Length: 394
Image 1 (cartoon, rainbow, N blue to C red):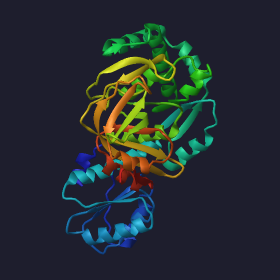
Image 2: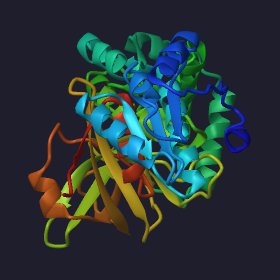
Image 3: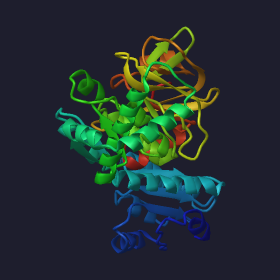
Image 4: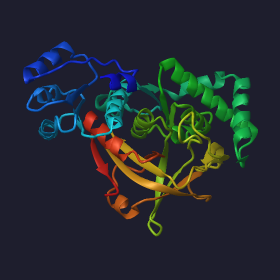
């Protein structure tokens, strides 16, 4: 108890003791308004674990080694058979207990999160699926509103942001200073929308709106800045990828980026390509990697980012399907930043089991990539939120 209070000082934890299944029933009645339960098994054949796990809340079963082992094994096997949101921890390292409990915080943060989607398309079905699967609220905003805030953005403040981006860039190739100022005004407009609505994430139907002359500037540099500072900016009104980025942010504290993956089977690579990527891949307090300000690759206009990300490190790539309550995941190691005029500006090459991933691919083109090997944590989180996990590289 003392360790949990010390390690999770921001948690509101209520402690109860159960010696029987009836005690478990009593506890559920006494503390039903909770985000989750933790059953720390100090003895066997008590039965409380079955009762508490059966309540259907996210539940973590923890074995005090040699004391609760047999009941943890049997309770967990039963809970899995019942498809309950239950995770088991059996470890001599107390940090594994702390890591498991932190997953409940991720679930809580997701339920408190809001996503803004800027589009004139009907996104009601996807928005409802996002809400029902993870409790995330989606707010639709018409492009006219974003354009209004773009026009109202403070020009001097926009110029300061533009100068900062230019000064910190490795170089600027195609865009003029005026084009970068436009991008800064769009960043300020998106920031205003987020603040007014208490939202953490925004996704804009950028390509469709720009090509139909319904958006006054590309949002790419704005997305870049939002992702660097701890919010989320996502491309193409892709709510599934935005949800994946949201999970990533709450789970790891790191930035992530959407991409159009390109397979190179001859090298066992996937090249994750897009015109938006962060330059602070380890999160807002981490180091900054070099970046180049480029035009948007699709039409050679506007301003976007070519981020030169760290090499020789593991990355995790996921996608989320809120309709199926499932996610895909694969792991790789970064090997190259590709400089090629074809496709999008940022192109991070990752060594993976490319042939297996191609065979197991599902759910469209986009994927979301972030630094570190987070497979174990994602699988554990999936158990607590009732998601199926497809490992694409198996």
